[in-house]
Image 1 (cartoon, rainbow, N blue to C red):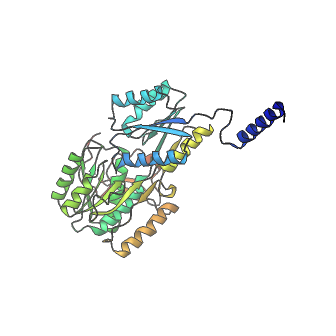
Image 2 (image 1 turned 180 degrees about the vertical axis):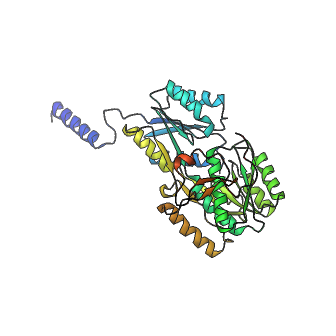
Image 3 (image 1 turned 90 degrees about the horizontal axis):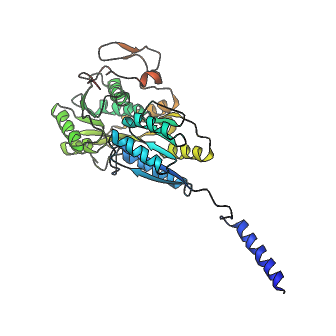
Length: 363
């Protein structure tokens, strides 16, 4: 065989191999760089942990198409603006910021980097390249409240909370409404920590509530301190953000848990496909973004059956935790009978409902 024929066969074989190979002579697109900003340490439970679980789920689902990084424990202040800008300057094409206090900084930086996609969790400001996302935490809180109303002996329920913003107030009020729907004597007492993550303050607040005769505790803060305190003191508790039963195997009755992986994956698929637009996502139980953790065996069977039925009603839209009549603690009607509270009004919530003790602090 001549050298020329050998050469032709060799080239043909190489071309055939290339055509069948996942690699080609055309360079594949580089993975999209994605940055995440967290308000607290990742840890192994809590708000930030759940977002990081979602990040890892998305990275696995889109293997080879994305590469992610995160910056944890970023305060809600000028330092947040610096971190957001540094992520944009270092080539991240998509940035997710996962705390309410990052909102104004996200908006500012998004205007300076119009080709970067920005997504902010729990906020309300949007822009040409700035979307928002959240979950309907109050749906799980309502069901947790029903369990609390059934399980309490003292009729005093303790709630440790960070800041009096609408998202937090929705949870407090839904918890109270759930409890009072089955136990009209139930009362929710709230202690504010003025911090999303401060285990010491959270533990102190939980201890104070127990001293006030609360026998069921929950929280809207990021650590496991409240559940741990309940476990140590022989009280009931509900975890939040994550299933925290390993920190309170006897104490935890259930938990309202958050699930972000499918949302992060869809968002990144849209970005990669070039179809992403500024969104306002508010997903709940029917979307799989909110779930309740397994129920403690101590909960009576009839209560478990009730919770399963009501969960189905929430998913179908038959039940709304803020179905009228809804009255605030001063007796003012906020939602009339026969109507459900609108998303717009939920987003502006700035009051306690009937059944919550004390006065709401100024923001």
